[in-house]
Length: 108
Image 1: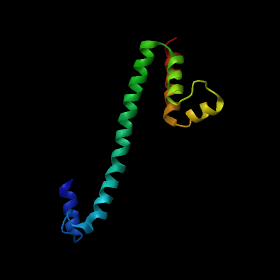
Image 2 (image 1 turned 45 degrees about the vertical axis):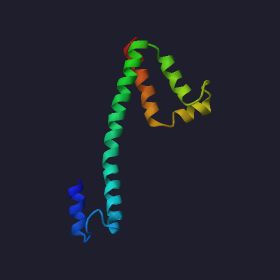
Image 3 (image 1 turned 60 degrees about the horizontal axis):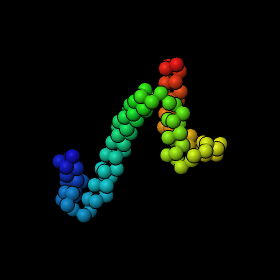
Image 4 (image 1 turned 45 degrees about the horizontal axis):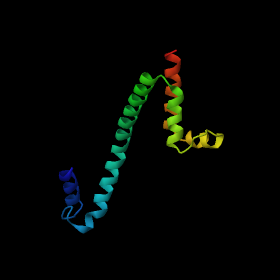
């Protein structure tokens, strides 16, 4: 990566990354790298979340405790409609609840 950025910096007339004028170029390259890297790390994270959820459900067979853990995680001990709505605003949590329901149906 260093070779690529230094090569581009030199083609644009900068002395290299040590040139203070190249700071915007360096920040631009970092932001592009972050945009490319973020979806990959999110996909890996979701993969491990699904594995952990499946493991927990397979070993406890307790969907109620699974749901309760999310409610406690959000700081709510009683699932009022407003708190439940704020919990479900995250699409990841909705998918995790849906996976728990699918698990329940498949393991009756």
